Length: 329
Ligand code: TYM
Picture (cartoon, rainbow, N blue to C red):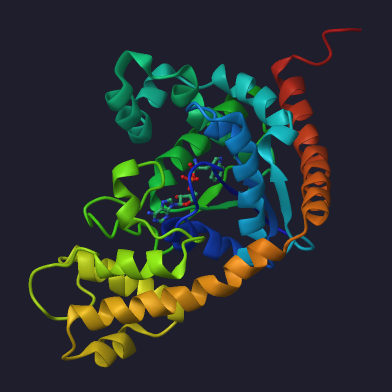
């Protein structure tokens, strides 16, 4: 069986972009692949975090994975820092990665521009940790949103270079980026992606744990384009984004949706979209609340054990190939 690996950071709150771009596909693919879904708390600490909040958000994200439909009897769910191999492989790959290729990462450039000389070493090294996550599991497929594409290309380059220089060690993974939903835009500014780290964009971001009033308010205030027609059209990014969300959440075809809103105004679209979203979020929020703490602990413990057993084999293989094991007679 081929393997999937993916993860999300336990920072801020999980939003519709995370769900539609990534988590939704994890759920859809988990029975076709042997799947590993990680809560990447080591990536989260590349920015300062309140330790108590980080610990709570880590558990909350695990609950959300389960609540959206990740089945712990089928998939392995674990916390990144519970499997030390991730950090150890990062060091080996640091010695294979080049400054120039990490400097080219657009996410790093963005963050470096904002923070200038105070930008952390962890922010710079972030993509190498991500490559380690993926390569440890001999991953075939990585379901992510479009913003992770460049990190995936780096992961492939590092795997290919390591295999060339030290002998076959890692599978070279393919990205899985959905045709629709790979880049959900902010409701407040359709030129920007929906994002949890951008504080100004709270109003443009529907969180999976938002209450009914917040969902209605955010859709009501959503920016629209000039014109009045309601149809899928990439040259009108605001309406296109709202229609994409509608399409993915209630599984109606683009044609049906356009027919349905034919001759209607934007207020009708926003109102219906809010109700569709509320209906979609309700059972997820109920499941998040109902998962018992002990059960969650057991899932994460078993997940870490299973992940570690596989990660250990790959790490030892990489160390042996680099001459790090066998030096002692
Ligand atoms: P993170 O936590 O920022 O986001 C989790 C997933 O959500 C996707 N995503 C979006 N998709 C569509 N529209 C949006 N507006 C949107 N915003 C976010 C992201 O593409 C991602 O798939 N570096 C990763 C976490 C990571 C990882 C990994 C992923 C660490 N190691 C190994 C895959 C494999 C990140 O920051 O995701």
